[in-house]
Image (cartoon, rainbow, N blue to C red; front, side):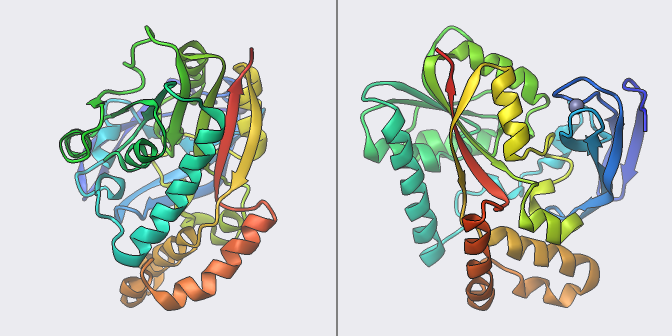
Length: 321
Ligand SMILES: [Zn+2]
């Protein structure tokens, strides 16, 4: 399928006012040739009726939503109840498990970034990861996010050096030793432009810590339209270890480490999304706090991690010297 890259149309759904949607060329290679990999996926996260397609570029294989809301209208899909904006999204025992894994990730950063060095968390949300870093090392920490409520919490409750700002508006007057993007790059309008900027704000030899869903995963293959990682239309790009490495190479970075995360949550989210379409009475049981589902799905998630087919991946990329 060859698309007219400048064509736009209007989408109307009962959930909200009309939004403009647009076809864009492939972010990686600029091609306008693509075909649809999965059509008409609903926004299960918000349980809204709007549907979008996942396209795959015929030239380079990068995947992305098509069409997608314009940059002016995408905010509609970030209502105040959007899950990552909630600092208490997990509590109790699960919060301790999450803290354990956050600590492991933070300790990994410690291996690459020396004392006093500058780290910025782009898309820091309510500051959970920055707060964890603060307990582990003497770094110059800062963060940005576009959600004012999250930044207010991070600044006033966690006492972090954070501000409301988009990465597009982020100034380029400072060289950083490390930039962190935890599930943020996939929300940016152009990962290519983001990589260009990263190459300008990370010092030669500095690091880019990237966490991003992996659509070359067992989850994506089995759950198909119910895979949490599509998060359509908020995710603007779907990457695999191969396509992430291609972006890294193109913009002057070297892949130092790839870690597949242990993540039963995405499997539970997938069941929840399936239940939303087929058996709504099961939805309350498809919860990450359900011990039965955790007991069944954690070993599957562990196998996916072992075989490097997890739906969530973390990369340590080094800017070439
Ligand atoms: Zn392409």
